[in-house]
Length: 133
Image 1 (tube, helix red, strand yellow):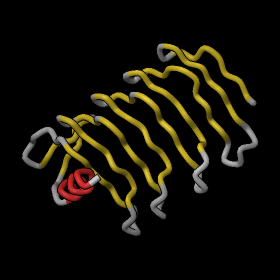
Image 2 (cartoon, rainbow, N blue to C red; image 1 turned 90 degrees about the vertical axis):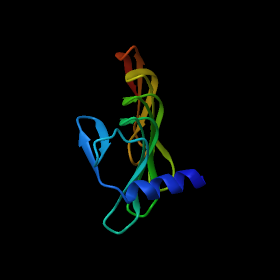
Image 3 (cartoon, rainbow, N blue to C red; image 1 turned 120 degrees about the horizontal axis):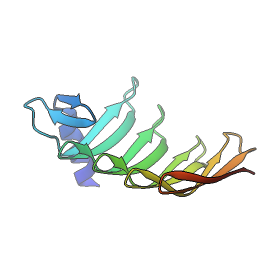
């Protein structure tokens, strides 16, 4: 956890530029490390990790009160692994899986009031089935 905080702090002190889907430092080097953005009220908005300019590892998004609302993972700029979102009470709203940028497995998406749930099934980025519960 200390490395995470120190990495985010050092990224906050630098200037960055985005070229396409990659992040570079002001001297043109591909950035490796954590990068944090903030809401207008100073609360964390998002925390990203870059490796050689590309999104890599976990990403975390927060609402303006600082509560976690979405997490996901990247591998070389491609969504990879489990992605989940939560409502303001901490209930899971959605759960999805990627395999190197391709949708895979069962995805669950719930309405904000939990009165409707959608189940989607993917294989190799192709929708196989969808149902409403």
